Length: 116
Length: 114
Image (cartoon, rainbow over all chains, first blue to last red):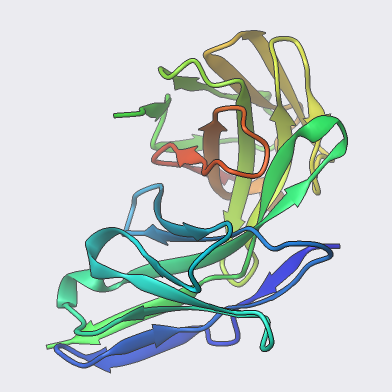
């Protein structure tokens, strides 16, 4: 079965410093990976996805993610953190179903706190 | 912009009540999903639907049912609410396209069962 793991419940970083939010995956076949962000009292917003191609994927709000097949990881990164980046971040993997349908399987989430 | 709208942001219901959570999307998406979100557990799929009147069980369907009479609307029903169903409920939709597409989420309904 497909799964993702987010090993850190919380990540703390100072504003202006680079940030990394970690995600590892376990899939059979090619992985299709996503990052979503949830701001307080809001639904999830799509940040970026990896389907195929370049291992470095660029997304919204200056975020990027690095796909590493040998380490089965898909870490989310940003060169310079902002206080407004403080939110809950979810890694997800596509799971295929019979009939060509698909669903997302989510990690437990990582809370990012950026301090001034 | 794709819009997924959930009818309530906050709900408080009593144990044993029948509860309806409504979700409407305006992008003519075929696929719709209901997830619940709990701290430390991430999002878990309750039910999904890939067409009108079609539904499939997700990972945690017990105690829930769904209805999809129109393409744009997907309802989650708690037949007899219990305190362990206190949670944040998130609706999502996505177009067809198999492996390629992301999902669009509503703002969530925080349900408290007392």
